[in-house]
Length: 581
Image (cartoon, rainbow, N blue to C red; front, side):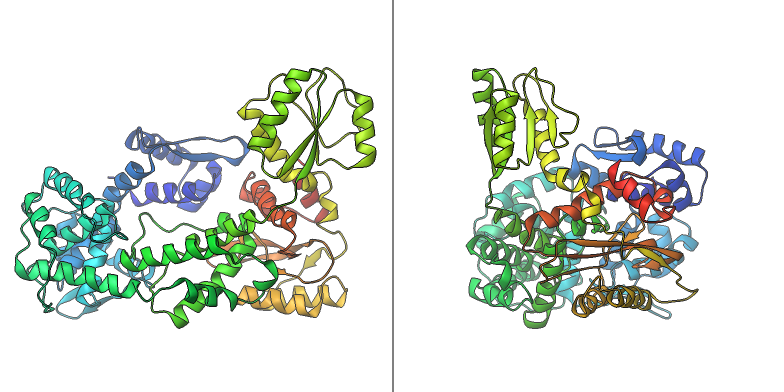
């Protein structure tokens, strides 16, 4: 079995690469112990994932087979086994949990409060003196929670009469049932197993049901539910179906239009509403209240699509107010917003291809325009033509595909020889996404307005942000309205923090371009249970597509370095030097 420390190492590396020293600090052991743990993890995860050195960023986790990786992790995750035993019994004393898990009672005593905190938004874990611990939820929800666990790994717990062969036959049978189009065969099979596991505890009386074919297929898999258990299964499925019928595209459009600031972005279209409606229908029909793996930080998502993520928070809040949907996975809704934003980049950016061979120039032009979205390629046959083109337009990138040597003063140039391969187009994509930021970060991250903030011992995060914004308003770097938006955004939670740098931000309606102000803090402070050493205040226009790339580029740079490097930045010059490396 993997130890708690080894599982924590996997948790950390799932989020982002991490240096050896930082892994040792976060787990409270020596670097030598971490190296031994990594060797053991690589042996245990053989063929499914591997931890290996990743340059300046430290060690990184490369997942080869995601499904097998998470299933294997779950078998080593005592939290899931502990939760399964709680769901299987009405009351379970601590000593009985320890015996079933073959773990010390002290471990169970320490783990129960953590498990309660980990799932506090999904369900209530309670205890009764003299009786034991239990999941304080209605029968229907307990069945779905257990189904979530069994979907991750059907063999997580031993069920009498159930073998791997039964499970394989059940999965195959459920895939052929078309009566529940919004529920996958795998999810349906996990519901069958959960009802089977709890068949002797079911108390809810369900009406007579149809779906004789479902009953026949389940029995052919060698699983016998009995009349009451089968009624429970069909009753659950029909309840889900009726709830899904309450969701309509018109209702989703109405909710989207009520989000502050969304109208100006012009992103509400058929694709967006269909995506969100479809996702909500799946959430209702096949709820996942226990995620398929431990919920990691969503900082990478927030940094890549900050406008999308902020709007998704408003949307989910509206959903919870107006629609009775227990929704916990805000990341997918955020991605739908992000896709909508990305789809509206209609400008075709000019790229000059300097090539002195006609055939290769034509091939490469077609390759670039096919693989790199929203660009138009202009071919220059020689340096003279290149100069003439640059006098008329400012190309975003010059691809030197020739034998000519360009002047060192040309900064937005990339040399790729011969026929451009997929690796070459990836170079072009990366360059286009970051060139305008990397070349002149001072344009976006301003020296005026960057300062040192003397936060005091015990000063709250809200007070710190208020003080910083107040100083920026007094210096006319941001408006009072922008300061209010930033402070309100930080109060909402889900703060954007990347490698010890907090990035409080707002979406501005001012005509100014992106403005970022780097603020060093006197003392590190905990925000959302993460240490924050410094602050970067940012004001951006969500309607300006290129400004959204600044957040993603910033995240990629910050994650490239150890946390100590970020916390050790002593001022604006050091921050800019980091962005230019």
